[in-house]
Length: 416
Image 1 (cartoon, rainbow, N blue to C red):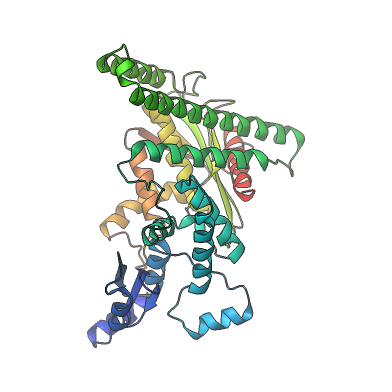
Image 2: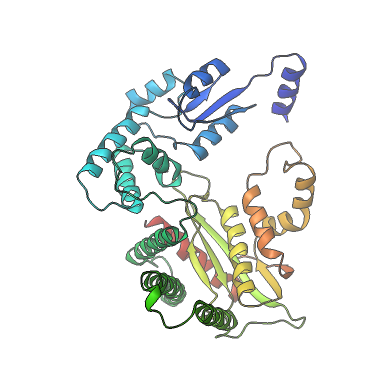
C-alpha cells in the first residue's frame, strides 16, 4: 500500500520514475532513462524492450523474455555487478558461453536444435549461469545471430509441427530417464515406500506408453510422406482409420479401472502438491493426482519445467492436471478433494474479485499465480465441480496417497 501512495504522489507532482527493461539488445538490463535504453536497442536486430513503473517488473521482464540472472562466482564479480546496478548479469560469462558453443558447433556434424540446447545447458552450468533452461529464448537468439555457424541446421519454425513434436518427445524421454535414474523413496516406512514406488512406476509406464504411441504415429506419418505413391489406401480411408483409432482411444482412456463415485454421481479425485525448500532457491516441487489404487489416471511428477517451484503453485497445477485427466476420460462431474484451503478460496471466493480489480489483490499487489489460475479455471470449465476440503495428514487414505505421489514427484525433480 505504501508503494501505491508513493507512486500516486510521484504522478501528481510530476516525479514519476520509470524503468526501461531491455530483454534483447546490445547490453540487456534495466535502465533509468530512455536515452540509455535507446542506445541499447537502436539498429539492434529484433530488440525487445518495454517501460515499467517499478524496477521489479522491469527485472522480471528481462528474466522472462531474455537472459536469466547470473549468480556471482566470486566476491570480486559480485562487487562488479554492484558497481553497475543497471546490469542484471555479467555479459562476459555469456560471451564466453557463446564462443565455446560456436567452437563446439564448428567441430560437430549433423546438429539438431536439441543438441545445441543440451550443450549450451552444460556450458551454462560450468559457468554458473542459473536457470538457463528456463530461458529458451536465448538459444533462438543465438542461432539467429550466428547463421554462418549453423548453416546446415534446419531451424524449427512455429509451423514445423512434425519437428516440434519430435523435439518434444526427445525432451519427455530425457526427463523420464532422469526420473528413473534418480528414483528414491528413502525416509518412510517400508509399506509406504512400496506404495510410492508402485504409483511412481505406474505413472512412468503411462508416460512411456504415450511417448511410444506418439513416436509410432510420427514414424507412420514420415513413411507415408516418403512412399505416398506406393500406398494402396486412399487418404480418405487413412483418415477414417485414424478417426476410428482416436475414438477408440478416447473411449478406453481411464476406463480400465473403475472410478470412486459418490451418491450424487461425482467422481472422487484427491490432489496434492509438495515442495521441498518452499520459497528458497533450488526448491523442488511435485504434484500428486490420485483416482484410486493403481488407477491409470494417477499422476506423480515434478511441476512443469520453467514454472515456479512453490507449494501453492504445485497445488494449482495438480488440480489442473486432474481436471484434464478426467475430461479425457469422459468424466462430467468431478469432486476435488484437497487439503489446500488456499486453493479452494482462490477459485470460489477470490478469483472473481481479482478479475474485477484487474488481477490485483486488496492491497494493490498483483496476483502472483495469475496465469496458472487462469489455466486451472479453463481446465475446470468442461466439468461440473464439487470442492471438498480434507484435513492433511489425518489418515484419510486418498489424501495420504496424493501426498505420497506429490512427494515422489518433487523428489524426482531434485535428482535432475
